[in-house]
Image (cartoon, rainbow, N blue to C red):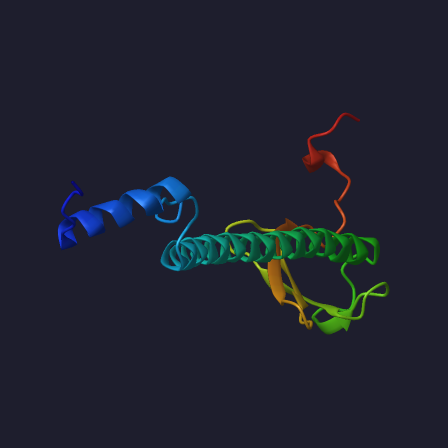
Length: 154
């Protein structure tokens, strides 16, 4: 006698046959999973790229500030060598780099007689970034007088 075939038994039989041949088993990723993983990776790379760019900008700004501070001190040394003659100076460029400009001014200080306030401003405008730095120093523009009030040994 032959077993009776029903629609349920055919479905079960086909499912079993498909599982045996590996047609219904899952060995890979679906397209939805690949798209979701790609979107997550793209967002992570965009965030990392932004952090790298911000770090680069901070590095350039720091380099420009350090160079501006050195150029301020160079201008002070130049003025000290000339005994502070020819002040005020407006927008003079440095010999080695014309993009850097500096200005200097002297003003009197009421609290400290015999001293004057020297203010140096350094400015760079360029294609990449601009930087501005100022330096204020108290300087003696008149030579010390020799005499009994100098407080030194005679």
